[in-house]
Image (tube, rainbow, N blue to C red; front, side, top):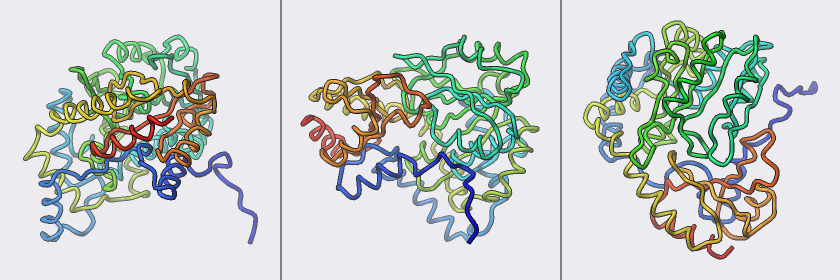
Length: 383
């Protein structure tokens, strides 16, 4: 066999896989990887069974089932005021991950620069590198994880092809405001750069604050691909269904890649989601209160520990500072936590090229049953 030359020599198994596998081995409470341990809505599951029985089991159209694209267009109009054309501006993908991957591959070529705001989700950089692009990272400002606009301006250059923004932000829960989007638009106005907006947690924003989507900012929407996730919204991460909203020219390019990656997404699931969106448009409006209650319950339980909580303004993640209980780097602490204390957590450093010295943060997921949250807090209280 000839030697294998890796296209991603610096990439190993993701921290999410490592921690989840250790959680299984040690029978730990898994508050690490971001998935619920409860089921999607019963009606949605009934609709899946219905559409399997209704013979919706062959390839869907490459861009997505028309009924689902129409339901997405109605949702985007209702929430954000954007009139996206189902036939030319909406594409159904294999989860948010494929939405991000095909968008990057469609836009980025050899030598192009891509700006990431870090902490940045770990899939962004490898896809940029596979596309031949170069990553430039701009750290978000601590403690609130806001954008340092001067540093972002300094990172933009003549080779900047794409800026990736994640709002609501994983892992911090920070959210971009309308003023932030205005500032981003002003920075990009004289450039030829596009924007990829990872908005998969769009319906998990708390304390009466509404998500500010790039879909609701006409100037940015004209140069952006916005990625969303039904897996997050409907507690069904294993279904791997997401979508992109983008202007026709960008949609045409991302579909060129999408058709050779997955081509089409699970047909009965698409039909079921489309029906559910029409039957229950209130679901997205009620989701923030559902998860805010879980956030508050988990926070109350964690007050009995020596961990320090940072404000969780969105997503279903809670960052905690463990500096009072350990001086270990976060990766080592996370491994010790699952092996010795039976709780899975995700370190923040894998989201960063150069985490701030001395930062002691791990991410906990509160998209769990009450009993799971109580069990995790009981074990963390022993630290």
